[in-house]
Length: 66
Image (cartoon, rainbow, N blue to C red; front, side, top):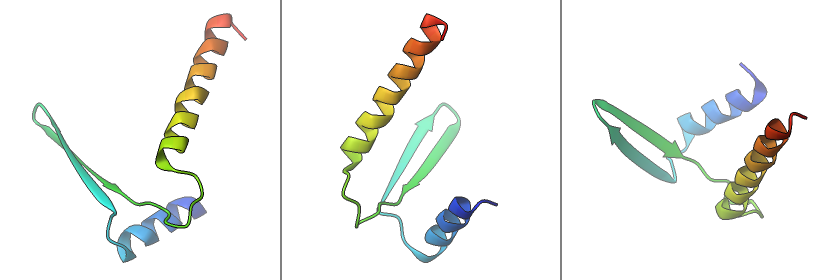
């Protein structure tokens, strides 16, 4: 177990989630518990946009054969 996994595991055991999302797809049910760093300076929207842009750049590089 890595240090990050340990921190996440400890957080899940000691804190209640900030949000819970339940998604049903066919016969499967996915339960996602969300934990937020309330001291963070970057918003969820900022992080999400950063991930999307990084994936787009990665996809473009793969398409160019780099």
